[in-house]
Image (cartoon, rainbow, N blue to C red; front, side, top):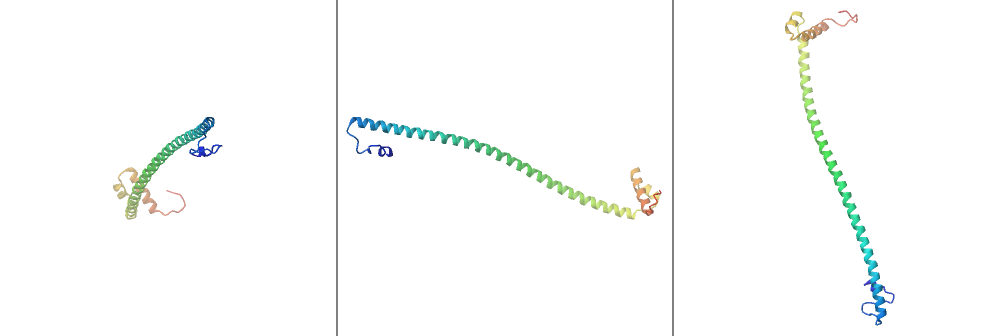
Length: 148
């Protein structure tokens, strides 16, 4: 409708020219204008189609990146859970080893100093040497002379 109103002669659909030459010129002008508008619309449609395709490709890339990040987060969650389990295991182990050290310290403190008792109580040669060394260390204060 704008095309008809934009014609140079100001012709509208209600008032068509009576001269066949004028009518043919008007029809040719309208066809040319419609063809130009149609070409512009097709070009805009093609641009829109290309933009939509590019946008879909970008969304695909972003969805892939999001999936990768979600997988990394899941892996980190597993690592955190593993670390928390290890923390509990180590805390329990530390508690148990502290209790053993307290018992060992009490046993060493109460241990008799007799070499025969130490030999009899030793479970192995290594244990004997360790016990003997401990009993010698307790029996003799450090004098700084360095003699055995």
